[in-house]
Image 1 (spheres, rainbow, N blue to C red):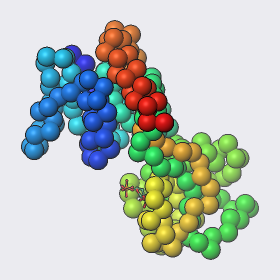
Image 2 (cartoon, protein in one colour):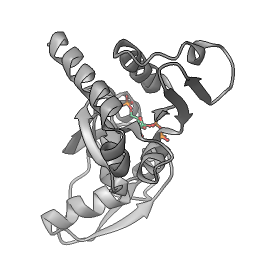
Image 3 (tube, rainbow, N blue to C red):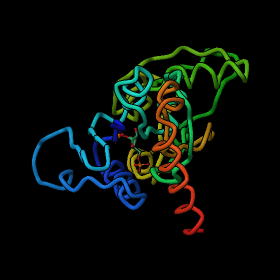
Length: 209
Ligand code: PRP
């Protein structure tokens, strides 16, 4: 049985459609219920819906053989997994944003509010900039408005959230997209189905170009 962790939500539905097209269908997943695990015994695949930020944990610890996780999560938690393929969906960017009239004073420690402390720390360390990280769990955009931080490091997709809160992007740190990841042991011992999915996803990506 190949265990596949899918990120719950709209992205996960897109991902499942790709896996289905790759020949790993599981019709019961489309039933309207609140089940979290779905199995197609005939072809040996089991899907489960998990919180997007938890996919890498399931895969790293082998509860899932493969899964799909955002590059943001992989950069933040640095799980010990193989990153196999860029699915080119769920695209956005990790950026530094601040109030529209913000001017950086390099003499001062920069206060950075973020859910992505590791990414922020690495980014500013590479620039040799002194920072103070304020770790938040959501609604990061509020921090600079209330004076809790100077800037934020967060995901920007359409830019609407920033715009509607009078914030703008000052620097782009890295582009983000969804990645197919595999548990290291599974990649060795279940190489056949994993390779089949990988090849098929690669073929589909090529056809779309
Ligand atoms: C993310 C991110 C921004 C928003 C960006 O939030 O933190 O708030 O999406 O999208 P936009 O550029 O299209 O407006 P998410 O919905 O993941 O919730 P969060 O508040 O938990 O971060």
